Length: 478
Image (cartoon, rainbow, N blue to C red):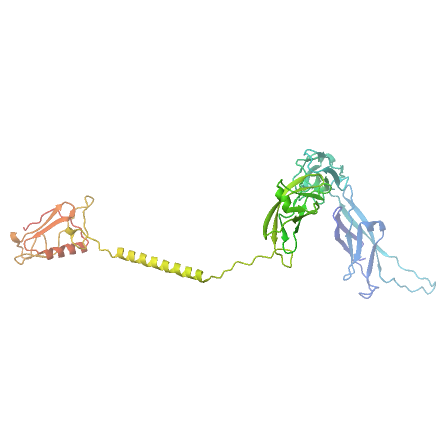
């Protein structure tokens, strides 16, 4: 060995590979039996918990912790490891004595520090089996099995349910007492082969807390709590092959609370007995036979079905009578045709023509309404001038008209006060008078020689210029 001391660490409850590696030195040719090392534990009892093997590439020894080893506290364990070659060592005999003396096997001590960890509580039993009948009243109690814990006080252990898929149970967290809170149904989807499984978990107060579990198996005895019923509401009777149809029945209960079943015709209708009979009338299915020829179609037949304990049910089976051909089922109906005949095509064309006609009438009516002439009041004429008839809100315009006006004597008026030659006759007076103070529609302009056309031109220019002038003064020739 290259070193005489090696150290490693493990936790008592945690298995670990490659705890440490030990190295050796061998001067023989590499990768030969005389070079490859073979390691072993000197104390064979330790082989239950530890294992050492050779790394084929490096020729090192690898130590593994393979089994839990419990201690009350953290301690140091000393392992003695030896090594030899795969091929036994060969030594020549001494010349004088002729004896062969082999050197001792090389050994080393390995110190393993074993850390003590919090051990989980242990249930006395691996599982608890409880036997009871289904549908029993809730409130029954069961105590958990005894528990031991080497590292914790059992009085400090707490309990909980980690599995209770149907929600039928509750548990006391201190005592672990399990109580049923609902009726248990053997036919529930959470029950498998008549057994309902719950799991109890015990948790100690260690650091960190450790826990263990115990299955609680409820074996539910069957009771007659289900009525027999038809496996299918409809059966097929092939009219071309016979007059009999089999009626299967199911019951979730187990014997003796299920089949074989007893069949009979339901109701008190005497005509029913002249049309149908049952043969066989006992078994897991009944044979329904027609006593008269039946037309193809559907028929409803009432039946009374009872299990072995006399619990019965009234059912109605729908009998489908058809021509099965070579098969045992009615042939599937063909898909509905999507092709149109001559009548269908004609109906479509007629509908389109009616639609086009209505559309044409609608367009004509709308066009006439749009082209109607809008009648204007006679007194205003057919003009494009805007009528202003507003009272209040407008400021009095003080702008002076600047349009040139031609008087009768040839004088051009460019201002309401001045003329080009400084003289305007009284006969050439231009008067602008506002009938209403702010009513431009009532404005009157008078001129001794102004024509109606000139008046209209003035009004048009005044409008297009954007000037809304309400004049309340009279301008006279100075």
